[in-house]
Length: 251
Image (cartoon, rainbow, N blue to C red; front, side):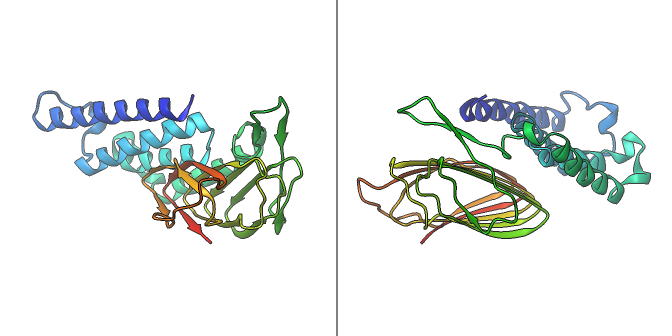
């Protein structure tokens, strides 16, 4: 499912739920018994949790699935009869399940391994790097890096950069692209942040298009107003931010 389709479905879901909230407050219909005792703000937060879960299921982002489910369990703990394990046991279980599923299904996560098909050939380029790398360099042109429960700084030294895939959950990540070369003139950077902070440093000469979606998070683009040359490298930054922050800085 492409980004446009996901956004359309999310928008429709939010509009439908907003309409339900209005009709509920106007006493047009009554909420199910499981909602008894849950305040208006609790229901509003639950709506956003459902949207995050929807996006996370499509992206196979386990942190974006289990943590929102934990929030829902805390909100509805009384109707569900699970007050004995909320909030801390539920939160700990959600974190443990996130770690466990990331280890059980590493190949199923789109953030762990990335592929990129160029416009002028039929080859697929892939690259993987571990958390111990201080420099990221891959002759095939694609770099991928994932951080969980930690902090790190990475320097991309690729001489033929085509794409980058960055995933950060419950951590802090800084990635510098000023040492990369893009002979093709185009690079795609895919960023996904959940409950963490990511900062990417982009050469000020690049022409950046920001397509990042932020849900209960923030995408701070600090390069607004920069006017690169007409023949500058085209850099498309895509991805999602939920309960975290992405900073895009020109250097």
